[in-house]
Length: 550
Ligand code: HEM
Image 1 (spheres, rainbow, N blue to C red):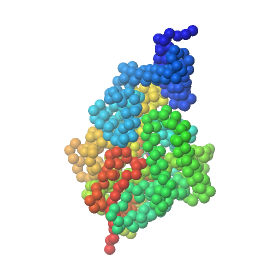
Image 2 (cartoon, rainbow, N blue to C red):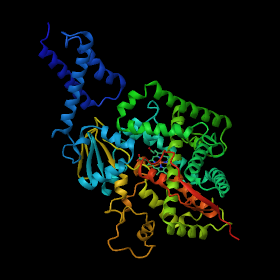
Image 3 (tube, rainbow, N blue to C red):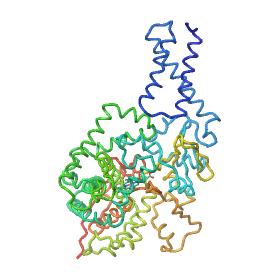
Image 4 (cartoon, rainbow, N blue to C red):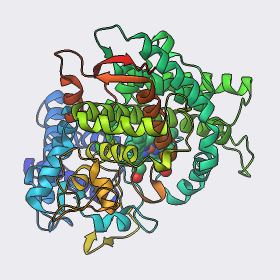
């Protein structure tokens, strides 16, 4: 029976509406289902629709009508009062599609935009069709804490190797907790102390290199700290394998890492695009190459055997704490995660701390005074025994992390589709909604921190009662300070990161003096901190002098 042209049109539109219902209900991400919904159905419809025109135009018209109907239906629904997030305020454009956020994320500065949205719309803003951003310290525990929400779908998009996700991409809380036990063992205080010989060796190498730059016009400190951290993480995870401080980035590994992270920015917003893209040869080749490199380094590490308790020792269960040894793929995924999570993060914060110190010379002088007090020239800069008493050092690091947190937009959480809706504080969260606590907005909210945009390390001393009287109206809310996130999925390497940053700052300031280079302000690093931040090749030029004390 032949359909009339109106019936043919209605058939295509109805099929598109049914596809929308399927997307809405099950949010499919796997490639075969997406292929059926986006290509298979319109292909099948060409047998019944637009049959009066030639075969090529029939395909073009059917696909165009099907996809236009699907897009229109999605758009109307997202803006309609029936959408489960309709009650939440936010710009209309952001409610329609993720594209706007992706554009912003790629350009950089997304965090500033979301903070500005919070200024306009209040502590909760709808920033995507199914996404809410919160800026409310009272929700840190309900969202991120033990009884909080599981990880959101952004980590699924970021996962390089979804078949064997690394710890950070594990969304199942039970599986995550099981795998996290290993990391907790690897970063407990006693274990972190055992990594001291590795940090000592690499910090001494960094000091030597910088001391040799004394007579140069300027030295790119960001580059050397990046190389230093990458070499150190290689030592820690795979027992060595890179010598960037000696040879430079000859294999372009940092460039490779940067390209991967840039790709993840898009994939984090559209996990289903990630599933499709990871099947493309150009993308999958890069992942395969990276894993092959990791596999070789892991094999070398296994051949060389354990030279001490490094991170691999724990990840590969060489300590025998887990009844079941992890597969080679799991060790590899987690080993590569450690390199990425541990290198650019700490190096960026260290460089930013020195940037802030040099921008505010009085803070630099005060920190040098404290370092000289605890670490005079004959004191071992690698000893951690004074760290707990170095309150100004802690204040400088806290203040850098407050102003320039690495994960500025926070980390997504979401009640899973099929597991029911939930509430956080007074807010109703429909299942599947992506929720973020916006770190940058929280850290710079005047309700929580006075003079929120100023680099003012003294605030931490004032708050602890060790920095004189608090100024009138002084606001300081430690509960709103979440640079390492919070709860069962917070940063696994926090203890190591803090210990390393303290050691390196004490070593650098004990042995060397830094100053802005003649006539050249730190424009590039400043742009870096305002723009993309972390995982870039931005230059930070300083002049270096060896401190000689008779
Ligand atoms: C200043 C340096 C660092 C900062 C600011 C930082 C921050 C963060 C943040 C915000 C998260 C996300 C947590 C969440 O999803 O709620 C995270 C996760 C993680 N970080 Fe760090 N990090 C730093 C250094 C390190 C280092 C040195 C390591 C060591 C390998 C590390 C390993 C990890 C791991 C394994 C995770 C995933 C934790 C999980 O899912 O359970 N990080 N980090």
